[in-house]
Every structure is written in structure tokens, then in C-alpha cells.
Amino acid sequence: MSIALENVLAKAGLKVDANEFLNLVEDAARRLTPPNPDPSHYFSADQRAALTDVGLDLSPRGEDEPDFRARTVAAHAVLADSALSVLEAAKALGVDDSRIRHRLKEGRLTGWKDQGWRLPAWQFAGSGVLPGLEVVLRAVPEDQPALVVAAFMSTPQTDLVINEHPATPRQWLLSGGDPEHVARLVATLGSPF
Image 1 (cartoon, rainbow, N blue to C red):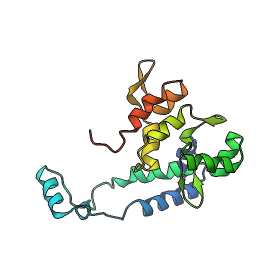
Image 2: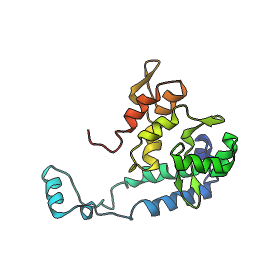
Image 3: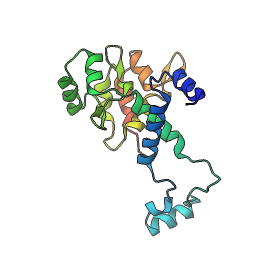
């Protein structure tokens, strides 16, 4: 296996061997989209006409163009690798695994099912959960996938400022920032501005 890949994984703090990581990437690529999707197939004839009238190119990606899915596939693989199982989350929080399932059912933790529950690591802090997590999770639109929410929680937001610098929602909450402020921002995920 490539020493370079092993170095990248170690620098990123991912505790996964290179072969396992490549398997995650392959699985994510297979599940996320077909090999070369034709964007025009996702729209009706009227919608295609309207979109092309405003200048959008709905043609499939050319063989010589970079694959725009690569970044998403890599992000999905990292999200899956860093996620905790129910047992790992229970151990981290010092509770019984049934309490984790109960919190998932109530929306007090978030996750997805993939051969059992997988809980994104961004929602945990030390031996507890992120301060204000329940307030934030109540505001997440139901149609937003875990990858979108994880990206939001780890991307600096201009509306969340700590020491005159934009902070990620996670940093904001860890520093004692108002969770309602993050909730208002996360509620807009997927909404056109």
C-alpha cells in the first residue's frame, strides 16, 4: 500500500489502515452516484429548457474533465470512518447502549444506519455531547444528509465569530456560544437564498 496514503491518513488523524480506507472510498463512490451521470435525466423537458435558457450546462462530464464527485466521495469515506458505533458512543458517554438508541430515537443524537447505527463524531466532545446539541439537532431540516450536516458543523461561518475570526458551529458551541444562533443557521440548509 502507498506510504503516501498512509501518511495522509495519519496526518488527518484517521485511525484506519490504507486498505480499509480505500474500501470505504470505493463503497461511497458506488453508493453516491452512477459512474457518469447525465444531469439532464434528473429534469423534465420543461425544466431542462428553463435551466439551459439561463446558461446551465446539463451535459454529462467529459472523459477529460475532473470528476466532481471525488471530493464528496472522500468526505463521505472520512465521515463513515470517523463515526462511532452505538457501543463506542455508549462507552464514550459512560452510558448503556440502550440510552444511545433512545437518544437517537428522540433526536438528541444523530446518525444513520449502515449495518447498525453510525453516529458522526462531530457531535461528541470529551466524555459528553456537544453543548447545545439538542437545540441544533431540532433545527436540522429532515431532508439533509449526514454529510451535509457534518460539513456545516465543520465549516467556518461568517455569522459565528470568535476572537474576530469566523468559527465553525462546533467551535462556537464548544466555546459557550448560543446554540439558538447555530440552530437558526442550520435551519437554512438546503434552502435557496
